[in-house]
Structure formats: structure tokens, C-alpha cells
Length: 476
Image (cartoon, rainbow, N blue to C red; front, side):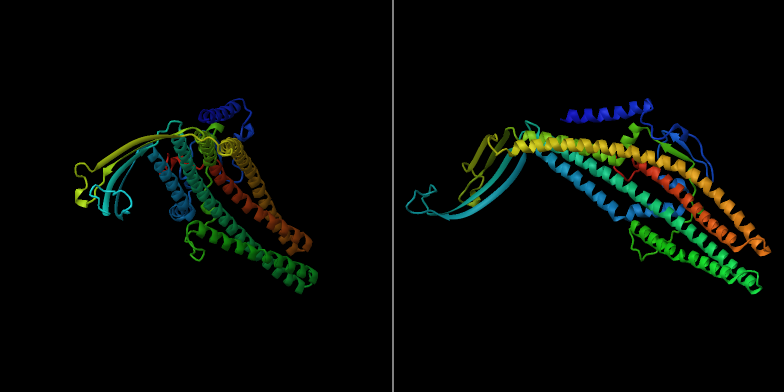
């Protein structure tokens, strides 16, 4: 069964390598393998580029670096994953002890009285006597059919699962903090844009009121501008609420309480977009993604469980031995003639268990099939994650270019419309339309910028986050 497990992995990995060579399993179209630099820093993909263990430093933000490093030392989820790995490792070491003989020592002291109707127990014919028995017992169970070997193998696979779970927790934590920091920067940008819009609308309202006093505009125009200002102002409190919640999230992720305000604050202008993005071949992705490796070790453990179920249906051998002394007085222990010893062997063969052992083996085989399909599903999901992220990055670049152009055009339109309105060449409806267009364009630009940062961080997570380059994650 273990051979079948290994063959299954070789087939899967060879399949994705051959598919990539034939152009059948490409993660993105060839058109994306080009540089793009519209509306922001240039980015291009580098095939086979290794991912640094501290990938977040590529954003060149000291607050982000400090927050993530502090979180990696204080986050309770990460500490729990580290403890789980220690539990799994100790379970493996404990099971390995079954390879060796078990030796135990005992000592018993009893006081007894024999019935006078029976033969005396001691050679002194005394009815009352004391008995002191020091003894050493040795037992050994030979692993004839591999029961212990497959049990250790299963526990080792579970230890590897815990190790990859630790890596996954590490990546998830750093990615979540990066995403939360980018979202905070986006919210600050939206808040700044909204406040700018409030200022613009407030100034415009004052102009309209002055023109209304001179009879150039109607009261309806003033009321419409007041409504426009109120609508823009109403969008500010929800943004402030989201910003407060985002700060609470970052505080908790870093291992603190929401009441403990963070010293780090994030702005889009303080982040630098990485210019070179790594892309892994499918076979490398299978090796890098901790969730894929977890699924692989789950398959390994399920394979070992079949061997355990099968060994439980076969004979079990045991060797035992005892050596000690038995004396009527403590001072005579280990004296000549008081010693005893015995050695024995036994074999146990299950004959009838009501079908329990048979069905447990069948259940183990079904569990292996389940783990096999889950492994395949995890691999496919990993490919999908990378493909989706790369496609998102391509669209983000185009969206940022369009948003920047739209914002510039809307800004020019708003300025010209304001001047025309002040000169009497435009009506208020034109101004209102220009204000709304500028407001939407400004917010779209902020969101397009933050989406590009967020999807860049998501790519590093989708490719495995470089955990294999970290010194604080055990390699084996």
C-alpha cells in the first residue's frame, strides 16, 4: 500500500510537469508574460524565481515589517500550531519505544495466615508468615507483520501534517496582516478622498448661496447642492467605522487586545509595489504549497492505516521473562536458594471478531480513497488559486490605468464646469454631474490601487509564501 501511495504521487507530479511542457496546464495565457506599467510601478513575472521567507519586505514598508515580525512572535494561533507539532513529534518518539523490549521492576511485601486445615505454605510449618518478592519483568513483542512499523509511519505522517499546518498558519497570518494593512491604507485613502469631496461640495455650496443672493441661480439649485453635500458627508462615518474595525483586526492578529492601539499606521503612499513577481511551475507548486503537502501526508497516513488494519488480523507474538527473589524475611532477599526465573512465549491469532477487523480494514481502504481524492482536489484548487491571482493582477493593472485616466478626466471636467458655472455659461445640473463623476472616479482610483497591492500579496500566499526559506519553521 505504501508503494501505491508513492506511485500515486509520482503520477500526479509527472502529469502536471508533462502538461506544462505541452502547454495544457498553463496557469495564465502567454499574453500575460509581459511587462505592464500603466498607472503605477512596473511589474513583470519571473519564471522560477524563489520566494523569500520574508516576502512582505518586498513592499518596503517598515511599519508592515515590524507588525508582521511582532505578530509571528505573539499570535496565539501560531503558538497553538507550534504546540500541535510538538505533540505530534512526541507521539512518534513514544511509538518508536515499542521497537525495544519493555523492562519493569516490582517489589511486593505481604503478611498472610494459612488455614490450619491446609498444608503449611512455608517449610517452617508456620501459619503466619511474611513474603518479600523483588522482581524484574521483561517483555518484547516482535514486529513480525509490521504493525508497529506502520503505526510509526502513520504517526510520522501526522507529524509532517502538523509541520505543514504550522507553515500554513505562518503564511495565513502574514498574508492576513498584509491584506489588513493594505485594506487600512485603502480606507485611509477613501477617507481622505471623501473629505476632499466634502470640502469641494462645501465650497461649491457657498458659491451657489452667493449666486442665489445675487439672483443668478434658483433656490432649487442651492437645495440640490445641499443634498449632494449631505450624501457625500453620509459616506464618511461608514468608512471611519471600517477603519476602526480594521485597526482592531490588526491588533488581534498581532496578539494584542483591540483596546491596545497600534503604533503602525498604513497609507498607500508608504507601500511600494514589488516590480518582479515569481511564478512556479506546477510541479514546484505541488512541493511548495503547505496545504498540498498536508493533503499528501494525509494520504500517506491513510496508506499506513491500511497496513495497521491488516496486521491486526494476523498473529501477534509475545516474549516474556521474569527473574527475582522470594523470601520470608527481608534480610534474606537475594540469598542463595531464594531466586526464581521464568521465560515464555505466546502467540495470539484472532479467529472470530464478528467481522470487526475485516470491516476496519475495508474502512481504512475507503479512507485511503477519500484522502486520495482530497489530495487531487487540493492540487487542483492550488492551481486555481494561482491562476485566479495572476489573472487578477493583469486586470488590476488595466483597471488602475483606466481609473487613473478617468480620475484625471473627471478632475478637468469638474474644474471647467465650475469655471463655466461661475461665469454663467453652465447650469447647475452640469456641475452636479461633474461632481458625481469626480467623486466616483476618485474612489475608484483608490480602490484600484489597493486591489493591485492586495492581489500582489495574494500571489505570494498562493505560491506558498516562501516558508521553506524560514528558519523558524522546521524543515523535517
